[in-house]
Length: 352
Image 1 (cartoon, one colour):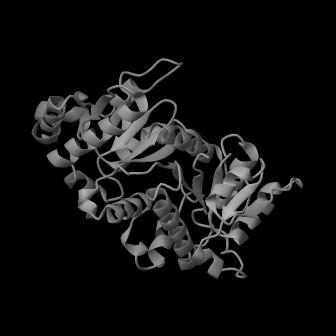
Image 2 (image 1 turned 135 degrees about the vertical axis):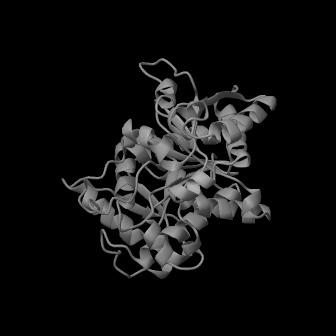
Image 3 (image 1 turned 90 degrees about the vertical axis):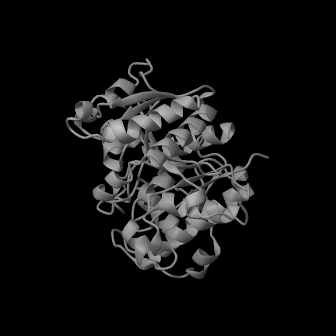
């Protein structure tokens, strides 16, 4: 039997449980063989919110992950881990409120699912949004991780008996029109600028090349965004392109990568965008920092965006949005990005 896909519930005070329930309701083919790692009270509350017009969405507790394949369509299979079982009898955390309990539960779900995936018990891991403030309130060990990516990196390194520095990962945001990989992730802009080093740019290019080559079955075409306006305009607006990014590109080309020179960041994303069934000039764009890359992807539509962690020894995807505390519990949350994340996780698991 094929391995199942785990979906972690994310922060129970946000929209994670709601979009999960909607995904099982609206996309029975995509969610076949998937199960939720989370808290039964939170998922059943979400099922009541989503049901609205009286459509019953049962949440079925599993004793093991493999049972997910035997659940009928439009049923939500749930595996309660040890920490969630300890919460049995407690009411769900209130909607829209940051809490240590929600952060602890969200973190524990990710740790359980990631370790199961590292043991090759899962085909892939899909993570619903967590709240970084709640994760920090949960205390040790979660207060040392800004988000999913860094937590998963730490777990992968520990599983391999290596340090975090020995297990580099990168974030890729993707939709039907554009893929973007980031040199740095959740750091201040000042720290992000300092992170534009020869080693970091070259390492990101190599991780991007290896990951997309496995998916595309060919050498990916990587467009590189400059750091400065007009990619520095020959040094008039900054020299990072000449001193750092360009040399990293040259080193990557010597290793057989198909990489552009540093290009003006206000046009490179348009050049890479696939439109009307026609591929763009590049398969992916390397962005120098978080917002430089994420703004164009999200502008094209958050509902189709998927976050993929590159460099892990497991497949991990996530919807391209946060916990949306302001609409949690209203039933208005859109599950489209989560459904795309599940679809992409299945596709990636078949090529890994």
